[in-house]
Length: 429
Image (cartoon, rainbow, N blue to C red):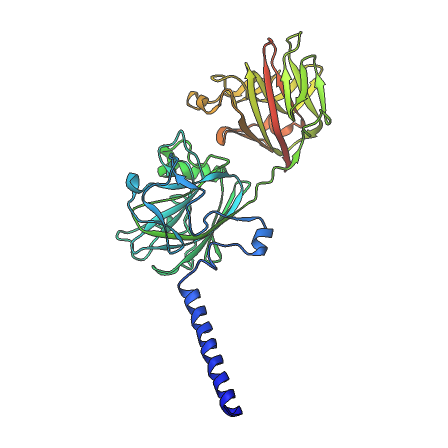
C-alpha cells in the first residue's frame, strides 16, 4: 500500500470514529439523561446539596400517611412520575425526611391540561390530606387547562395565597421547567426557570390575614408548621419530575449545653441537675421544691431548639427573658408538663399567670415516654412556640417585648419528677 493510500485510509477511519462520537453525544444528550440528570456536581456537593431522587429508584419517598409508595407513582425515563390516577387511587408522596429551612430544586414536565403541586412543611397524624397542612407551589398547564383559572391557581403561585409574577417564563407543555423553593427563617421564595416569581413570610400578620380570607380558613393547622416533609401531588395528571435535590439551610446556632458538664449554667435551689450519658437531667431532690438551671448569659431575641423526655411526672418548663432571686423567678415560661396540662403554652411567673393555654385538641401532640422536640422563637414582643413541629402558641405582648434576661429550665415542686434534656441550641437574632 503506497503512502497516499495509507493516509486516505486513516483519514476515513478518523472520520468514521468522529462521526460515531458526535452521533453518540447527540443520542446521549437527547435520549439517555441518566448521566447528566439526577446527579450532583462537585460544587453542589461542596455546597451541601443532596439528591432526593436518584433516577432509578424511589428510595427516600413514601405515600402520605403510608409506609410504602402509592401505586400511581413509578420511575420512567429517569424521572419520578405520577401516572395521573389522582386522589385515593394515586396518592400524594412525601419525603421520608423532614426539613425546616432549606432550598429545594427540581425540574418537572406537565401533561396537557395537567395539575399538580410541590408542598413543604407537610405534617401527618392530625391531617387528612397533604394540602391541609403544607403550603403549595402550584404546577399547572396555564394555557391548556380545561377550565378558567385565577392567578392564584397558576404555575408558581403560593396556591390560593400569593399570585406569581405576570411576566414569568413558563415552558410549553411537553418541555421541562426548573423550579426552586427557598425557605429561611419563615421567609419563602418561589423561583421558576431562573427568576423569582413569589416571596412571602410565613406566620406574619399578612400571612394570617390571607389565610382567613381564603379557602384555608377552615384548615386550622395550615402553614403553621416549623418543619415537615416535602410533598409531590397526584392530581389526576401525568407529571414527570427529575433532578430533585435539596440543601439544608437550618442554622441551629450555638450549643448551650456541652454534653459533659454544666459549664455556662447556674443551679438555683436544691433540686438535682446533672449530666448522664451526654444528656442533661433534672430530678427532684429531698426538699421537693422548685429548682432552676439558668444560663449565665442573657438572651433577648433568639430561636431556641431543644428536646425533652418526661421520664417521671414531667412537670417542668423553659423560662425566657427571666431573672432569678434564689428560686424566685420573674419572667415567662413555656410550659412543659404532663399530657393535658398545656405544654407549649405561656405562663408569666409572679405576674399575670397564664397568658396563653393551648386548645384541648392540641394536647395529643405531646409524646409521653418519648423525646419531644420544641422550638421557641422570641423576637421583639412576639413569642411563637412549636411542639413536635406543630405551632402551639403565637403571642404578642408588650411587657415581654420590653424585657431581657436569662434562659432557665425548671423542675416543679412536689417531688417525683424527672426530665431529661438534649440538643439545646440557641440562634441569636
